[in-house]
Length: 114
Image 1 (cartoon, one colour):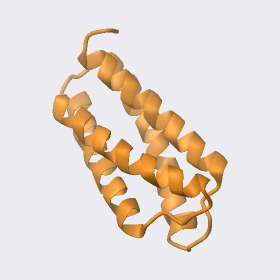
Image 2 (cartoon, one colour; image 1 turned 135 degrees about the vertical axis):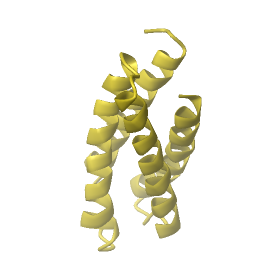
Image 3 (cartoon, rainbow, N blue to C red; image 1 turned 60 degrees about the vertical axis):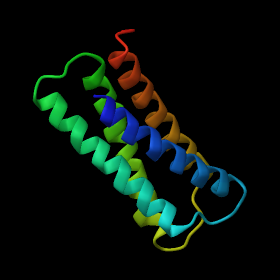
Image 4 (cartoon, helix red, strand yellow; image 1 turned 45 degrees about the vertical axis):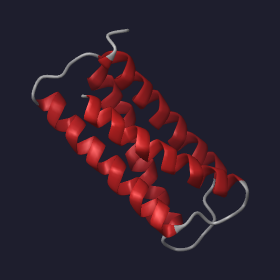
């Protein structure tokens, strides 16, 4: 589970840099978007495998939040970023909020806090 958490943590740092750019009215670099997407997708696939293999509790709830965040990220990537349109700030904030909740649930579960 710790590898999955580490992958999501790196994805979050890259995502944070893109969010800062979006909120400053700048266009986030495509390389950052690709790296963020690849890392997040990798973490998501590994988390799905862990849940299918029996991880329970917080991991299942984290998966739910992260799946919804991934759908939002996919929508932003192909609906806005790929078309070089400005990312809607509310969409960025919603995506980040869902992802952070999912990450914190996963971390809390791994630390046996919940």
